[in-house]
Image 1: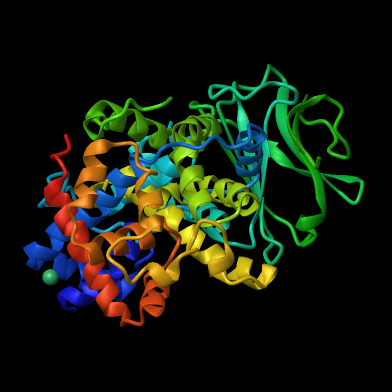
Image 2: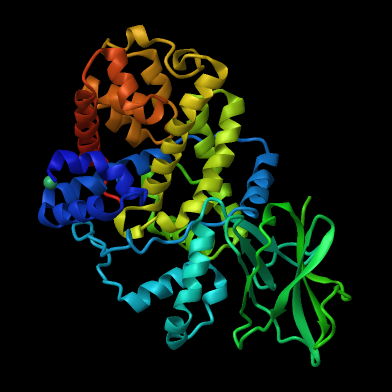
Length: 255
Length: 200
Ligand SMILES: [Zn+2]
């Protein structure tokens, strides 16, 4: 790769869109070519400074809420291990730490969701496969994601919350929850979803010491797109699973 | 939420606040995204209004912040500042949307207000349009630095990065190879970097 080709790729590189061979070639060139490494950061920084200096125009006030409503419904793209190679930024200063595979997995976990925050390092290897499933589910453009929150309570970063993921083309249903308190004595957290007006049992959630829970269910029901509600209730341990009896503790309901 | 005037005010303090908000957005906190929206929406909207009509600008403004939410894990601080990454993202979302928009409206880019009313004059040394774009910047130092650029470089930077034209479109208007436009952009940015005061 020559300097001209590098210049062509700089925006894709900044946007994290480069993969595989292209990424390898670019990073090899940047390490070898001081001039490119220097200019690359320089161009983007100048544009960033110009952008910062724009006189603001005031958008209509309702747009802010519209944005927040939309993001509550869409998943964040996970970090791709492939593009998370050793950073080069030696000219502009900055960090040059190399991520070990374990640490890299941890980085994904940390950024995927607060769910993984409480995990200890040694647990991460054991859960790596599970994590990969979350990553795959969250990354797939056909995946559906339902955010579950406490009904009627304004957003609070410390409150319990959960997410259910499913793909219409797969049997996997995944529910992750975080900041859960242990279920009251003799009770369990139980997850449900509603399809075509029928409530189906998904499974019981067992929070770990950090308040995190992962529920993975294989279900041949491929009508995930028709789900109109998913929610968690507190039920008596061992009670029948034909229908929920308690109030919705965390819920998502189709508007 | 408004920055005081002056480039030098984009200081490390502000960067630290933004980095912290970005970190929280990575953890899925919609609140933090709201805070970034409060910080950046005015500038993004100003930029978009320069390129497209209000209706589309409002649509794109939302699109940009949803994209920020979705793609925040693709921002690598070691590759550049958040401003650099985010503005690149904003421009890409705009350029991705323009062809669809034009098809939809069956309008030429030239008829979109604010973009290129005076393309015929763009071959001149200086156009009203460039002045209009230049007035978008509130920082006097920055405007002066841009004015110091050779005319072809100034035109390229103002029109392609802030005037809503792609490199290819400007090349077509001026009947020049795209590589020439890209070269001018790079030279201009390099020169600007020298003209601007060091950032903290
Ligand atoms: Zn080079």
